[in-house]
Length: 396
Image (cartoon, rainbow, N blue to C red; front, side, top):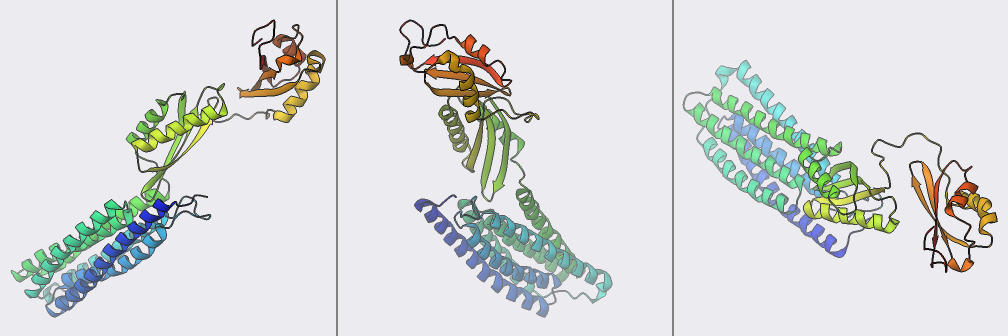
């Protein structure tokens, strides 16, 4: 289980506080604008402004959702969610985008119906509509920049998405402003057209947010250029012979990565692990958004998958088989260690023998191999002494 350290908990609390503060400011602004737009729009005959007011009220609802999901997504990893809770933020962005599309469809349909069914009943709006629309443009553009700045600083896609939600209100108010001005100039149908344009703008933003969230939820990989750079960084690390099966996926503002590294099959387990650690550090240094790297150390190329085969025996079975066959040759010599190399579906055995056992010089690797030639999984044998024998080299 991953646990959050002290500094980690601190920045999570700090980010959550910043997200809560900017969202509450937006909620108050949206509520005030929604009231003014709907009241002024109904009193001064602007269908587009009423629709824009409903859009502002929808922002209040979305802000409420953002507050709840931000609180959930910033929780530290636990037993049930070892990778963290940031997908809650992704789900929130998906819901927000879907809600925008639904609102846009309702707005556009209502305005289109009003334009086609009763075009002669459209009344030109009054000048207060222009004032409220202008106030909406300025205030929503300000909250957009404020919210987006906070979202980028704390690396929250949900807060950035909410900022764009605010900007759709600013854009729609611009359209309302233009439509109302045109209607007052003698083209009353422009107000209804403006409402339709507002709906299309909102739907476009909603679709962008929804599509980005769906791509993350289905574990879409990083782009091709970034993936090629990751392959290069890993492959250029000392000790790496080959890199394959590199897979990536997004988790909120971070990225999870796993990959296979082929190394020299004769090195130790600890050296292979150290090579993997070096790859991980290089990758995370080049791409800070990569939060976690899982590496698999391969002794041979398995990029095409493991073929069906009879499993090779484990250590206990190998030791028992070799001791039975080598006892007449080794006598009382103590086989205090065996190093097994599983390569190409066979086992290569390094035999480490204490030099104090005074092993008969007639015992060679070839004789050991001949004595165990009936073992189909045995590839080759090498004898190594922990101290050089008096009359021979350190390896036979």
